[in-house]
Amino acid sequence: MVQSKKQKYWFLAFCLVPTFIMFAIFTLYPLFSGLYYSFFDWSGSSSNKEFIGFENYIKLFNDAIIPDTIVHDYFLVATKVIGIMVLAMFFAVALTQLKIKEAPFYRIVFFFPNIMSVVVIGILWTFIYNPSLGLVNSGLEFLGLEEWAKPWIGDEKWALPSLVLPAVWAGIGLFMLMLMGGIANISESYYEAAKIDGASEWQQFWRITLPLVWPQIKVSILYIVITTLNGSFILVQVMTGGGPNNSTHVMGSYLYQQAFRQYNFGYGATIGVMILILSLITVLVLQFLMRREKVEY
Amino acid sequence: MKQSVGQFLGRTGIRIPLILWTIAVLYPIFWMFLGSFKSNAEIYRNPWGWPETFNFANFTQAWTNYNIDTSVFNSLIVTVIGAVLTLVLAVPTAYAIERINFRGSKVLFTLYISGMMIPMVLGWIPLFFLLAELNLLDSIIGLSIVYAMSQLPFSIFVLTSFISTIPKSLEESAAMDGLSPYGILFKIVTPLTMSGIITVTIMNCIQFWNEYFMALIFLQTETNYTLALAIDYISSEAQYTNAWGTLFASLVIAIVPVIVLYAIFQKRIAKGMTEGAIKG
Image (cartoon, rainbow over all chains, first blue to last red; front, side):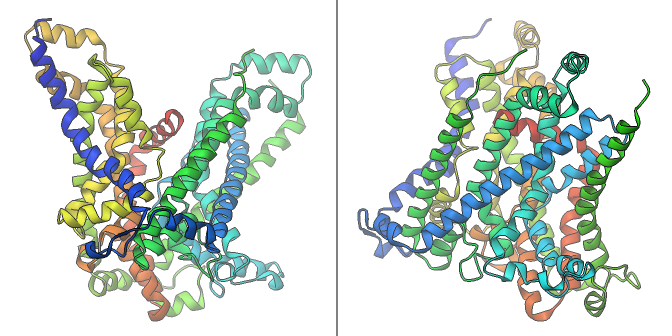
């Protein structure tokens, strides 16, 4: 090709430099200075920014709310992983293996909540849980189970578990599609061979489907974990704002409250560092736990 | 092949959970639409049933009392500017990473991609002050930039995989004909990547249209509110005003464009999102 080296470098710079500058300014710099801010006591105005070393971290370890927020986050992680994976797997198998005619219809419907705004999902579900008007309590009444009716997201004990359902509701479709993609790649011949050997449908599921879609399962679980740790606070913010009485605060919503509501920006950044470290550790541990030789038959 | 009775029952049985979940997904959405046509009194009397009459008072309420029109406009602006900016930044970089041999291309790619996994909450605090210093805080333009940056990793990621499917011979013969690398990028590669560009843009638009939390942090005055913030505001007001019908109307306004996009681009959206998740 007739192209001088200089020309090539100019073109390369044209492609890469503007984007990288923007990325450095608006993504890299904020992340690193977040780390830096965590060593300061700072209420937002530039005059009273004071270096306090590890004091924010000491405060973090002595803050009684922090352990709760961590527990709440991992509660959401665990329940979401289980709820989403079990249902998504069930639906994925049902829609691929059982040759249902109207499968595309279910696929389209189940996926839709994945692209709904968290605000819409949150408000919709706040209504479903509404103590007097809501669907849940009316349904319980209809079934004659009035004594089970409660204010749900207004109840300290039930608020956090109540947040799981909307998250599962909104998440299933995507993971169902990912698993369906994996199942579609499994060759029919395995199932035929299994049938000849007299394997039941259960056995086929455990011995063929599950091991062969393991890569998709692994990716799905990791994805749910990451998005929950990095984003569970959005639904929390919309539905409960962390209440009642901090019973639904997760790490991110607590950061928001500390930094942007109470102007403890330094402490907020410290919580951010904690979120970063915990999510990195979690991902590494999960990858270690879920490593498994790729199965090939 | 003849179905055994057991298989037939099994197939009918399997439909029950499928139908139940369909109802669980559709009924709340459907109900939201119905609620937007009910008066507040009717919502209290009959929250889950069919409206007595279809009246549009809630929509006009939302429009006049809560300036939803401004919010819709703001949301449109952030969505469009955000999506265009993402493309301008992502396409050349994706092309260079995929097709030009240079040292560090792998490192650069990994750097961008890890942006999808890092919790950005930590960065939002410094970003808040950075935007304030640049006079971009509480600004629609500022928010558009933040949005574009938030979707940049995903967009680069999807676009590189689309560009990798273009046969190299096309670029080579264009270069033989004397086309400059800029010409190759804009006249050959960009049109051939259109399918990927459309997929990425639809995903980004939905993302920006729906986004709530960054808007909550980086916008302050009501006239700058995006739709998500306006809805959140109406929702918190409704605790006291009980204007539930208006709230539903605003939810409907927010969801209709998403439904329309989904109806047109359902396959693309589903594919784009699953691929983004699988390889990310």
